[in-house]
Length: 333
Image 1 (cartoon, rainbow, N blue to C red):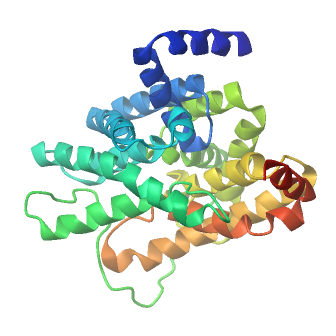
Image 2: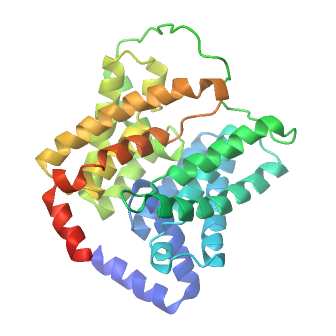
Image 3: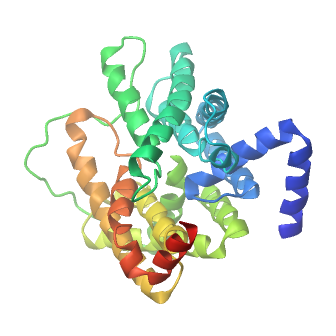
């Protein structure tokens, strides 16, 4: 695998076109925090299959269009070259491009919206990096804030309609929804869909392709993603969440990202870190349900905001929790 990536890198050095492809593949991989073009290629395959299986090819097309718009904008504004090469200006763009065709009705204006969203996500990414650099990482915050603004604006524009947006209503008294017994088939489906819903598609094969994409770059990332999905399903069921939300993976995709981020990116894998990650993953399930309720009056989805919120909180004790982080940061300084 290392030899293959080394050969690919040599080709990219000699070709501006291949370098552009490499940046976009890495941008796709960075959605699940993987700086690897092969991971990105497998993630794109997962997106394509999930969109095809759902009969909505426009979602995959939207993701690619917004990804290209985000990357080209990063070139245009002369973004940091190292971050650009690692795909860090593309992953929020592709998520915006996947989300807009998912929630909005097809039409010519939708594609203008997708391009706008992809381009703006790069600007928001640059702003977010400056804002959080002293204590954290941007994560998918640019995707969340850009998509929220674009979706909210559709209520003021006659040319854009939210075909699949949540129904807006004032939150009233809580009404319990019966949670059916969690059968093994439901458990497996909920676990796989929790992984695939990171890219806004509930599909078992797509989930397996995503796990493969994680594994080619980091076996630990694949393991933490799977464990995070399993834990999310269990926690959601024990708390009495609606069964359809569990099996659809709609309470598990943010916890999956939290598990990858805390377990393999911002902390080095260990038993202590695994337990800490489990705590953060469980809290992300709660945050997902809380934001689903909080955003009900606005009729917009929570997206990956629970992942961003919880991961930012759980990054706070990095230096005291893992002394090696403190040593590495001092050396870097």
